[in-house]
Image (cartoon, rainbow, N blue to C red; front, side, top):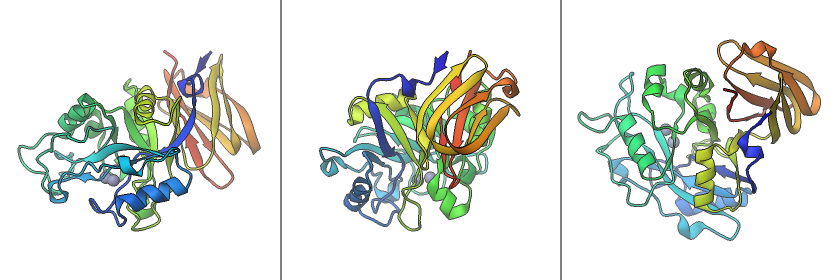
Length: 308
Ligand SMILES: [Zn+2]
Ligand SMILES: [Zn+2]
């Protein structure tokens, strides 16, 4: 029996958005109002991750004064350095950066000769204590080689709500599945990437299992993969029992298990809160992950389970 760590770790689930912008870069709302909106929408925590670009003054916005006794913030930024294969600048999400994280040589959104590569700045962020994710793979037009190069990454954005509303290129599932198939033990995050310039907020979040709603505890849980991602549905348990994966969730119409290659199997029903998905069609994949879809089409995604 293998149960996802989010459902064995002590504590409770805390809801948070890991990718957000403000007027400290190209967002529309000031940091205080961004934090207020997430707090008053019932989020437990927020990472404000403005663009770490010279023209914005390399912001790592101090959001500590917006914390309350039921809402916390994690310092972070979206890092930009080096070119992807398509010649455009890397976007790499870093949550849990120290406020004095050294600026890159990234004056604008155009790559510059001699600046750090995406892989180098990602590694520097991890060394500084951050949880690092490859942002919006589909919108960026990432190649598999691009994504593979970010060896320090903890996670891939499986869903970016801003990219859903702004360009109908929301997901990172294809590239994440290819990296998992190469043996990379990555987790999967849903984020807003909210700028509040369009309906790009409150659409994708993480549910992190931790004993306290404190930045250090949340960061450690993120790095361990003790979380799931959602647009609405709740995951309550994911456990592999023999030749099936048993999923408990809020009412769903489909529960899908996926592995390498074409390996996948769905169970469909009405208002299902439990489904046992047989694994025979997953072709002996060494990993599997679960997606749950509700009647409104909203999804939740588990992190991968490694079976060997
Ligand atoms: Zn971005
Ligand atoms: Zn962003």
